[in-house]
Image (cartoon, rainbow, N blue to C red; front, side):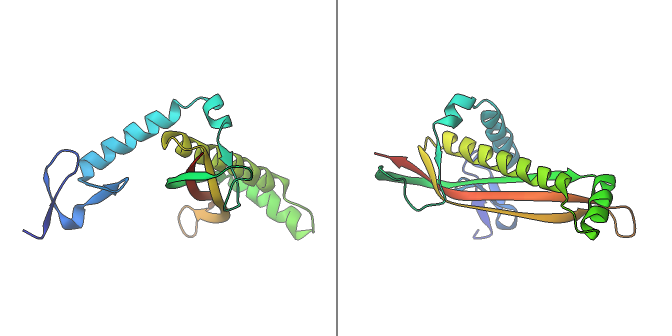
Length: 165
């Protein structure tokens, strides 16, 4: 019986190898998909004024505020495509020593989207701030080997959601 667990949402017995977790709750694959869709729907309904109240900082504290409660981990992953033609022109320009403005614009947009998504996560957790924020970006290849590949700009942000006194 140790090979089975109970789904925390539908109480169905699940093979341990198929178990997933959603916010710390063990769930079956079907419930996991439903919960993800529900979560994304909630995220899409968050208003800009709710997000504007969230403080985001790379520091481990919020100046002039005391942390009341550590709520959880806020995270964001943004994946944006860079077209083959734009990438080709950018690589040609960078080969001549110029800056690649199109990729810089994609990265700037990615950072904005990532921070917005981080704030949405914090709103859903009823947090007041996200501290210790780390942001990372990288370029990834997309497509098949030997064919014209597009590049993807991947921006991730992660931090600790907290309630303030």
